[in-house]
Image 1: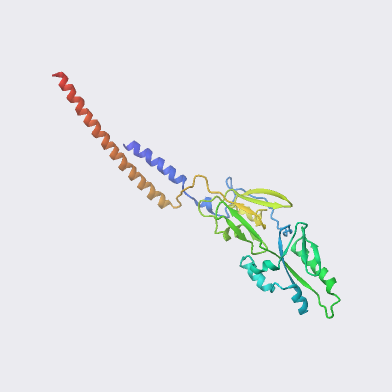
Image 2: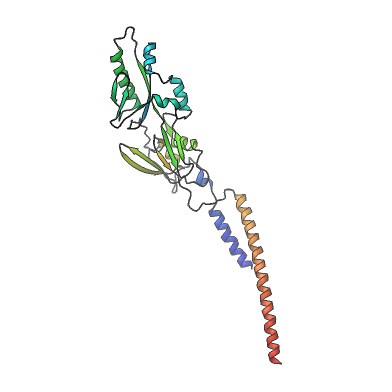
Length: 290
């Protein structure tokens, strides 16, 4: 019985320890080693280039009240920025945004079609200022036009864990800010092999990285872009897990006690059966001798 107990104990301890969620599996900013990769210094942030289907909010600043009213029927810029910072869907501002059509144009009042596909918001700002400046320079008392351009409804998606669509509420958003916005990953989701699906210039790429690596902050994976999809998988075999040593000890002790209890009942039954058949066999032998 002692041998069976020892085997049972070792098997249970091995299983429970393999189910432990250790700090190494869930902590960020760890030093690279043979298990955690080191990333080359490839950090770069490129301004987002506009694509078909994007929507732009444009606000025109001018000291001329009539010009202000002509181009800014959608409210004031500070309200729009407030909605952006709150990550909202911009509500009524959808009525006053400019959709980039299938030909890469927006249709702007008094100017008409303007090709913006492949440009940055800064490029569009300069282009509109130039076009409006040429158009309005004949107005008496005309002053310099200034234009603010923002992309609205910029978002990224997470699938696999904390699935959902989340708004990008700042110009540069890091992968850690994106995960924090989604409520982090939990204990049983893998940080080791996060997949990033990104479309650029009509080409879709899938990249895999380890979010535990300290070197991630210097890599191409550090910043996310609008329309990125982040796939997070569950750690294999972790339909349940134990994350504290005291819990491991408690569960192990309780399981062993239960196992010993069951073993004792089974062994007692076997002993009674053997005793019964032993007596019966002995009686048969005595009867035959007589």
